[in-house]
Length: 231
Image (cartoon, rainbow, N blue to C red):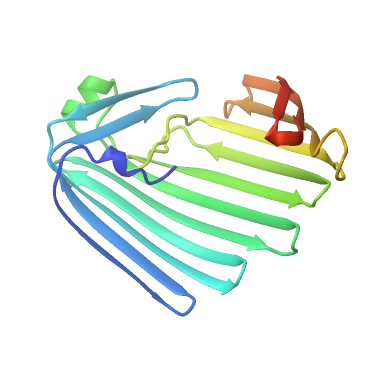
């Protein structure tokens, strides 16, 4: 999540503007905050701190809808105060090219510099750093089955201090799918679903962080009864 308003701890001034003309949408807000909350993520954990530093946070978002089920957008976030800043430029697109198939892609580039207080408290340095994050997804869904695939790649120095990004320095592949049986009236089940998923997370060097397999059987029956088993 690249924007999460709960990162704003104690705002004492703010402004917001939104508008839409035809297929074009625009939104912008800016906040002056008495404190600055920072998350320093890693590949297997994160640390955070709240600093007594006035900062100004700004988010600007533009979206164009070329078709009813498609969009292209750009977003810029900026948070700065004193010697500290974090800026993120994001491009994203979503497209449903059949009633059953959709794809999405998000690419973000961040630039960050910590001030001395943050660097000392969070064991960082004050040199500017930049990095990239990529997220892609594909989904296919029809009445009797669905399949989804996801890919994430977050560079070591990617930061999104106006969002909630707690892990960087990883690549992740995920796949999920299910086969669904729909019961006719009077049968013992309304819906019976057999589903599974697989994900693998690696560091940029290829070192394995996590590999996981899961499978589930879900039963929906009369009187809104529901049971799911698996893991």
